[in-house]
Image 1 (spheres, helix red, strand yellow):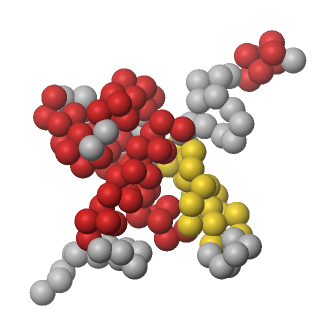
Image 2 (cartoon, helix red, strand yellow):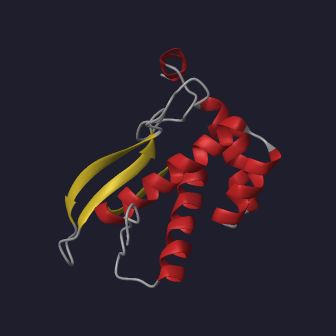
Length: 135
C-alpha cells in the first residue's frame, strides 16, 4: 500500500527528479529567489523548508543530512550560517510562492519562489532606514 507516499512525479525518473529538486533548492539558497513552474516550485518548497528546519538546529548530524540530500557543501554552508539563524524564531512557512501567469511558449504556470524575509529587489537584511539613507 502507498499510504503517505505522495510526491509530484514531474514526468521524470526518480533519480532525475531528486537531482533537479536538490539543484533548485541549492539555487534558492544561493540566490534567495528563483523563477520556475508552479509544480516544481511546490515540490521545491517542501524540500527547502525541511532543509531550513535542519539548519535551525545546526548540529553536525543535521549538516551531514543536508549535504547528503542537496550534495552541495557551499549551499549547505550558506543555509546553516545565514538562513537558519534568520528563521530561528519562526515555526514554519519560510518561503512563499508568487504566481506570475502562463509562460509564452507552452502556457505552463510560472511563479517566483523566494524566502519570506526577502522581497523582490531588496537585500534580505536591509531595513527601511537603510533604504532611506541610500536615497
